[in-house]
Length: 151
Length: 109
Image (cartoon, rainbow over all chains, first blue to last red):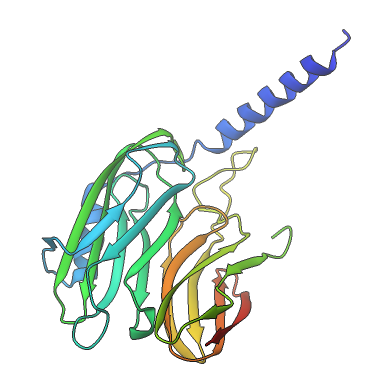
């Protein structure tokens, strides 16, 4: 059998895709209760109120391996009006915590962005902890076409 | 790691005193979650960058605790308020104990 260059390329691409799928079949232990527990650990048992924080994430993420996410908290970032930290939680991931951002007076503004992995379509939650101990949250439903870890 | 992680940072070269600037950082790292398996079905051990910090003239500006849910080649975008010229120092801490560092100067006019 003689392969043309085109066929050979198609075959190797197919093989690579197959291997990649195989690699991704890890355990998926999504657990909203674990997410809830992680949030309570962060807030010290307080239930977050809505407002102050804005979570930005795409409505539909084509690739769950890199989903851009950013948060912005309405705060002067000086004196008593400071944001201590922001926790990002993805409810449907095997391990719900995504990242914790810590701000200081030198941050100037309480905004931060990163890229995260999402295993499947799920709710992403951001919780801001202010320096006076009050907590605020925002959430977004993100549809994931291709899961990022075990999908 | 196959190759040493390479940090890339984007900081404005100059700023006005008191200006809030945007900093972007990226480091090459595969951020192995510990959930994936290799071709023989054996779990690949977790190896991620678990901490990122940014300091300005020795003062902490911003830091992040990373979990396996952060994408490969972790990217961060954040703000910093600059009042004087100085040096930003960026540090990434790997699960295996390695520390990757980068520095960038800024001139305040």
